[in-house]
Length: 227
Image 1 (spheres, rainbow, N blue to C red):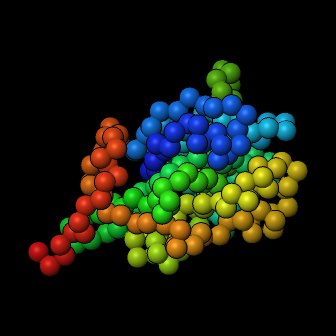
Image 2: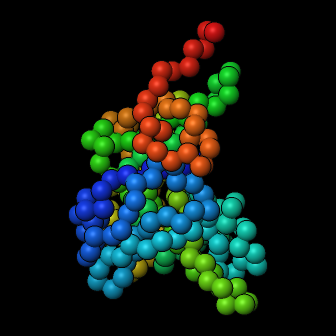
């Protein structure tokens, strides 16, 4: 799964990497959590726009927006079949910019958090799906879920799932609303190579969503399992 991630890359670099028409206003965050508003990039005519979406998908047909707390991730293998995701999979796809994400590994002393990033410390896109929900009273929520896939060989010892990190050459296809055939989209949702990533154990401070500073992603020694 993917329950936390980071985005501290300067806004100018985000605009360049994702080919945005303008530089967005972004503050660095090191502990982005579900239910928060997160940056996402969608197709807007012939350009790309950065918008803010609530993390936790609320389908258009949902009676209660609290369902979003259970839908922070969507499994790539079942997007075309599950009613909560299949329409968004065809028509409402987005890129979620990030520069790292966290996973937790069970140990004899509890769960050890790890921060995973690119070797070059550059930004990347997590595949996302978004939805538009309107309450009977007229309240509107635009929300997003992050797509996950089986972990690659590097991540497998930590967790059996990981977010789909799309290749830059796939951004256009993923965002293109004219591409709706599931087989063409599913082909993009594969684990990235472990050669591109670094996995670093970090402080358990990340477990507290109120903690949000650069020191969270500084590495620490592996827990001593012989103690």
